[in-house]
Picture 1 (spheres, one colour):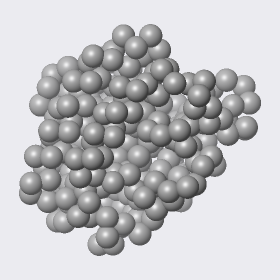
Picture 2 (cartoon, rainbow, N blue to C red):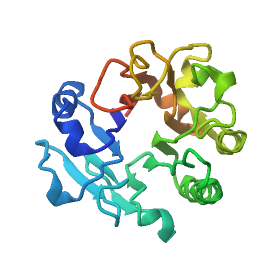
Picture 3 (cartoon, rainbow, N blue to C red):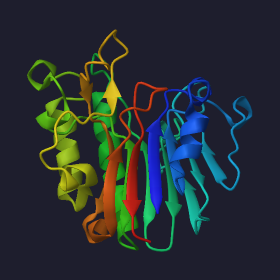
Picture 4 (cartoon, rainbow, N blue to C red):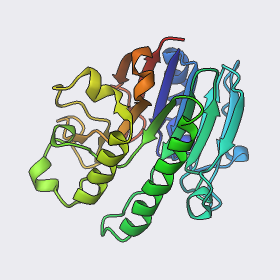
Length: 251
């Protein structure tokens, strides 16, 4: 089973930059998208053979998530039970036979860190939510987590300490999440692999020189790690300031 995740930074814009071609070529069983920035009537992308589960933000042109799945889920749940984040369409949960899949778009703390308190509250709610799911079956969560966890996950670590996405607070929360029983699949399989990023600034030459951050993840319950065959970064796929990531699991 192949699962793909991509923050497209606006699905309408990304569709003009090759999203449909990548979707067809990657041939995923489940395709999770973050930062849709559109409602259902605002984009006409209905790939054949897939069911679409869209969770747009209340605010037009902002946030939102969608999942395309050709595997029929047992159930689909929208949100994590808190209106501040659910109104922004940040989480969709699909239940499959052997695991839950949660598509995540974690709030950005903003450049001035003004949303830090809200972000910390989200982290606590999200951890409680996935631990509750885990009581029933293993959890796989993916998406834009908006944090580079360790120094290996960011090109210029020293100069970015304290900046949004690389604050001690955000990194500690991700450590806490992993310590509660989850595994960062890419780092588990490739513990020493540097220069492996999923986001680059739009500033000129940054992506070409691979001055990036790894802020998009597939993480799984520890009990599920034996089913993980590979964790992928599609670094050469353009169309967004993020690139897609993938997970191959045994069915």
